[in-house]
Image 1: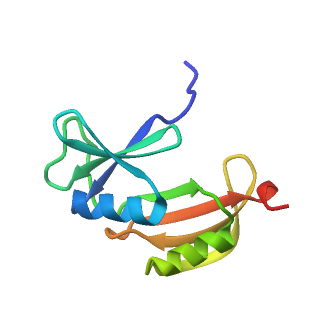
Image 2: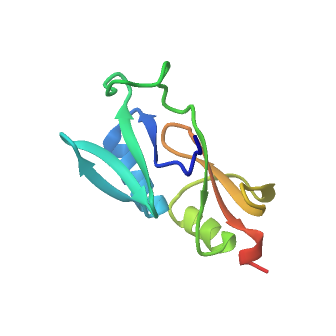
Image 3: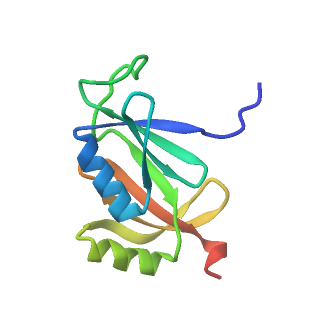
Length: 130
């Protein structure tokens, strides 16, 4: 077997409406409805399915818990503009800009928390800013 890519992940949240509002407003993700009223966040070719804590769909993770994820997203425009956008949206930057190592090379990142205290890292590859 050869793994090609991640298709989707599942994010357990305290409130689906709050998560949809935050991720669409702050990160520009599109909220989509699928199945029997389920919600997901889409961006690029990826999808984050949302499960509400205590009301998860089967099968589910062994211990679905809001606030347990650490996620890195590659974003545009550059990190300086992203930091300004986060500040304008009232999102507190926890750390950054800092240099890190991404999946394919060096990245510049800022970190913040979503409404469930998940750690969100937004990054740009250094080659994009040189």
